[in-house]
Image (tube, rainbow, N blue to C red; front, side, top):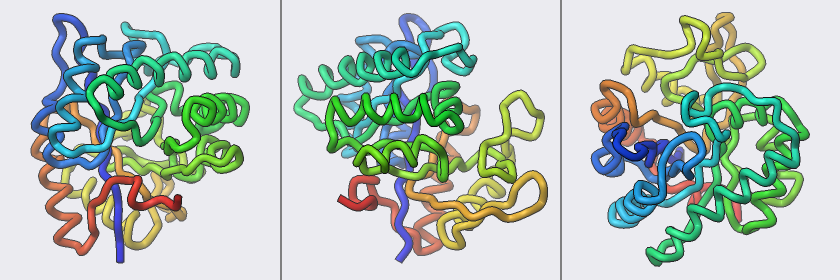
Length: 257
């Protein structure tokens, strides 16, 4: 039996700025990564998104990023492991307040953007992030790029981990995502993106930009909620996964306890 989680980055509006269609997307995903105010989001948006996720029966996760609103957390910073630890603890705590006040529970933590990509390759940052998550709550699940240093660090410290794959991103031969600075980083054909996901789940392989297959583990699929056709794609991928006999469940039901 094939089972996978679908996650989406949500709660990324800020003040007067609106991004994405959170409520509509929540009908199609099983886990929500909620921005914690550093790269996006604000206290009111955090509260509303937690409430919406709870109403839709979607599991809640913290989505901590670099403190870079202008760059949407996608610009690398010269960050020490201690700084990474502190900003992750801080942001988990911020979201936890809203989760607790709404009578919900937190399922996972998924770093955002540049922090996520830096941690995928740097063991020192990964270990700091994993330690931050573990010390806040060892029952939380740590999301990381499949096969990355972040997944290894989570497993090493004793966290449950979810290996994440991306529906609309292309891959390099080392298993990393193609940099967004490259013109071929994104898959713009929705059907090709869905086909890639189904193959990753069923065959545990992904075709790289170099034309070679590499092994990959797909516990959770990231879809983006801020694209022009995000809602249509969310509906499409959920429908086609289930039509391909792939069950869609929250990651807490998939990874070992």
